[in-house]
Length: 150
Length: 150
Image 1 (cartoon, chains in turn brown, red):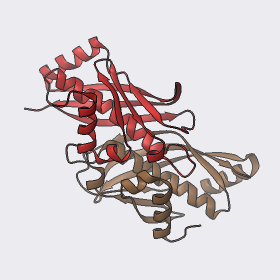
Image 2 (spheres, each protein chain N blue to C red; image 1 turned 60 degrees about the vertical axis):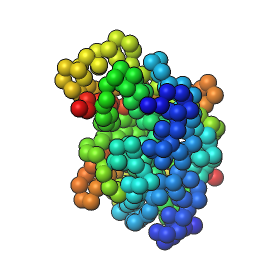
Image 3 (cartoon, chains in turn yellow, green; image 1 turned 60 degrees about the horizontal axis):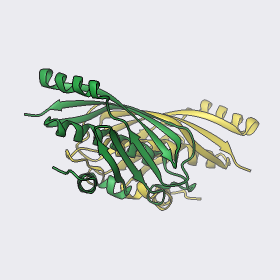
Image 4 (cartoon, rainbow over the protein chains, first blue to last red; image 1 turned 90 degrees about the vertical axis):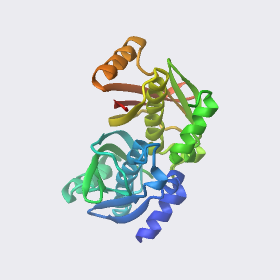
């Protein structure tokens, strides 16, 4: 089970080839959230700004990464499925960007874990913000379902 | 200006490297809409189904492609910006998939072109469905703004 940021990054790149193509780096991954970065060059569109599809995909990945590793750390072996998501694009992203997913609060995560133990399934809505330097350039929200595996 | 499906595909791959990494193919592009396909292998997640971020990115690309080439065909040189989008994931996508974006109806497209001529700016909401063989596996909706360039 990957533990260091570099191991988590290698795990994402090995299992999700698009994460590798987007050159996603994991700069934080813990209880308090996940931060991923991605360079403009690998994610550019024909206007020299970040392609909306890349921005959206990195956000989806950040929220999934938080769910996946937080549940593993809680000894919950789950399949995590995205049900819906929305993105709001506020400003053009004309440089390397980062995605900060805060994860659930401690009490909400505890509640999700108890729901999983009791019903084998739990839902969570995760939000993330996309940043260019320290400016918020897009906002993400995604609904995920975790299903406990045997 | 690209004209054939292969030329449009080459344009997307040349200008949006992630389109190339996702191995997107253009199978239809015209007034009636755009259909893109993408293989499972290039877009897989750690569960051998399509990564939600790829599904979402191909849908964003399909709608953008329709806007871009439809406006070009109407002699409108525009910058097209995505403002928001949402995706609903209905079923796991465990194979090569396609995205069908219907584009705007003739009358609605005509209205958008007149708005662009008059105000230099027009908004459009485009929807797309994602298909695995002939089963709908996800739905996309995106709000785009076209800004007329000098």
